[in-house]
Image (cartoon, rainbow, N blue to C red):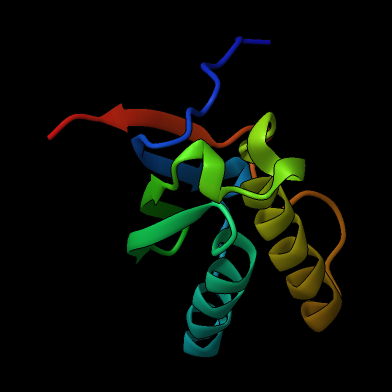
Length: 116
């Protein structure tokens, strides 16, 4: 498995997650609205969402992580955890709603630091 860079407080990132085997992530328009609401709830403690782009089989977000002192202690060393929780929550909801099973997403989300 490829080692990925750790997320760093105070930095700006593009986060990308793709559907497993390029499968659809959104089955109806309401799914995109639901994902955006989940994102706001899960990510608010650690970052500000600047953009969410939701294609049929890919999600891309631009987020600005808060400074370390603004982030709850339980997330400071694990900034990836709210993103992981978001993706897991969405996948479980979709699997339950549509009678699916198995992985909705590829194993790891991609992240790249953005420089202004």
